[in-house]
Image 1 (cartoon, rainbow, N blue to C red):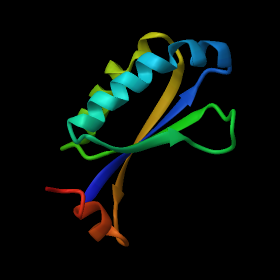
Image 2: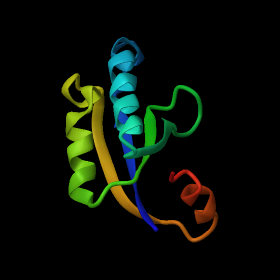
Image 3: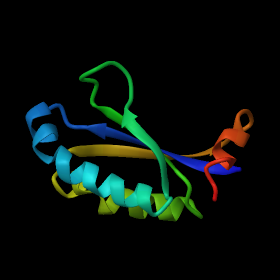
Image 4: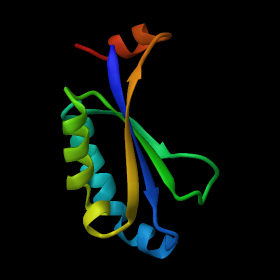
Length: 100
Protein backbone atom coordinates (compact mmCIF):
# COMPACT_ATOMS: atom_id res chain seq x y z
CA UNK A 1 0.00 0.00 0.00
CA UNK A 2 1.47 3.36 -1.03
CA UNK A 3 0.10 6.58 0.37
CA UNK A 4 1.29 10.16 0.15
CA UNK A 5 2.50 12.47 2.89
CA UNK A 6 1.86 16.15 2.25
CA UNK A 7 3.76 18.41 4.62
CA UNK A 8 2.76 22.05 4.77
CA UNK A 9 4.93 24.88 6.05
CA UNK A 10 2.81 27.77 7.27
CA UNK A 11 3.58 31.45 7.53
CA UNK A 12 4.55 32.81 10.94
CA UNK A 13 1.39 34.93 11.19
CA UNK A 14 -0.74 32.82 13.53
CA UNK A 15 -3.60 35.33 13.25
CA UNK A 16 -3.70 34.73 9.49
CA UNK A 17 -3.64 30.97 10.07
CA UNK A 18 -6.48 31.20 12.60
CA UNK A 19 -8.56 33.48 10.38
CA UNK A 20 -8.59 30.96 7.52
CA UNK A 21 -8.57 27.72 9.52
CA UNK A 22 -12.37 27.16 9.24
CA UNK A 23 -12.35 27.14 5.43
CA UNK A 24 -9.19 25.01 5.42
CA UNK A 25 -10.85 22.47 7.73
CA UNK A 26 -14.00 22.46 5.61
CA UNK A 27 -11.82 21.62 2.60
CA UNK A 28 -10.12 18.82 4.57
CA UNK A 29 -13.57 17.48 5.53
CA UNK A 30 -14.48 17.27 1.83
CA UNK A 31 -11.28 15.33 1.11
CA UNK A 32 -12.01 13.03 4.05
CA UNK A 33 -15.59 12.41 2.92
CA UNK A 34 -14.30 11.46 -0.54
CA UNK A 35 -11.86 8.99 1.03
CA UNK A 36 -8.79 10.87 -0.19
CA UNK A 37 -7.66 12.16 3.22
CA UNK A 38 -6.87 9.59 5.90
CA UNK A 39 -5.53 11.80 8.68
CA UNK A 40 -4.33 15.39 9.10
CA UNK A 41 -3.11 17.72 11.79
CA UNK A 42 -0.39 20.00 13.09
CA UNK A 43 3.10 18.56 12.97
CA UNK A 44 5.43 19.17 15.90
CA UNK A 45 4.96 21.25 18.98
CA UNK A 46 1.84 23.41 19.49
CA UNK A 47 2.18 26.63 17.56
CA UNK A 48 4.67 25.04 15.19
CA UNK A 49 3.86 26.29 11.71
CA UNK A 50 3.66 22.91 9.97
CA UNK A 51 0.96 20.42 9.14
CA UNK A 52 0.83 16.85 7.86
CA UNK A 53 -1.81 15.29 5.63
CA UNK A 54 -1.76 11.60 4.71
CA UNK A 55 -3.56 11.09 1.42
CA UNK A 56 -4.80 8.03 -0.41
CA UNK A 57 -4.76 9.23 -4.01
CA UNK A 58 -3.46 7.81 -7.28
CA UNK A 59 -0.37 9.94 -7.86
CA UNK A 60 1.89 12.72 -6.66
CA UNK A 61 0.23 14.92 -9.29
CA UNK A 62 -3.06 14.48 -7.41
CA UNK A 63 -1.35 15.54 -4.18
CA UNK A 64 -0.12 18.72 -5.85
CA UNK A 65 -3.70 19.39 -6.99
CA UNK A 66 -4.94 18.88 -3.42
CA UNK A 67 -2.40 21.40 -2.15
CA UNK A 68 -3.19 23.91 -4.90
CA UNK A 69 -6.93 23.78 -4.12
CA UNK A 70 -6.48 24.23 -0.36
CA UNK A 71 -7.81 27.62 0.79
CA UNK A 72 -4.68 27.98 2.90
CA UNK A 73 -2.73 28.14 -0.37
CA UNK A 74 -4.78 30.95 -1.94
CA UNK A 75 -4.76 32.85 1.39
CA UNK A 76 -0.93 32.61 1.49
CA UNK A 77 -0.95 30.68 4.75
CA UNK A 78 1.14 27.92 3.15
CA UNK A 79 4.62 29.18 2.30
CA UNK A 80 5.88 25.85 0.93
CA UNK A 81 5.06 22.17 0.95
CA UNK A 82 6.61 18.79 0.28
CA UNK A 83 5.12 15.64 -1.19
CA UNK A 84 6.47 12.21 -0.41
CA UNK A 85 5.41 8.67 -1.10
CA UNK A 86 4.78 6.78 2.09
CA UNK A 87 4.84 3.00 1.88
CA UNK A 88 3.19 1.44 4.89
CA UNK A 89 5.27 -1.51 6.02
CA UNK A 90 3.72 -2.06 9.45
CA UNK A 91 0.09 -1.70 10.49
CA UNK A 92 -1.39 -1.69 6.98
CA UNK A 93 -4.18 -3.98 8.21
CA UNK A 94 -5.52 -1.13 10.36
CA UNK A 95 -5.71 1.10 7.31
CA UNK A 96 -7.23 -1.69 5.21
CA UNK A 97 -9.97 -2.18 7.82
CA UNK A 98 -11.36 1.28 6.98
CA UNK A 99 -12.55 -0.03 3.60
CA UNK A 100 -16.22 -1.07 3.38
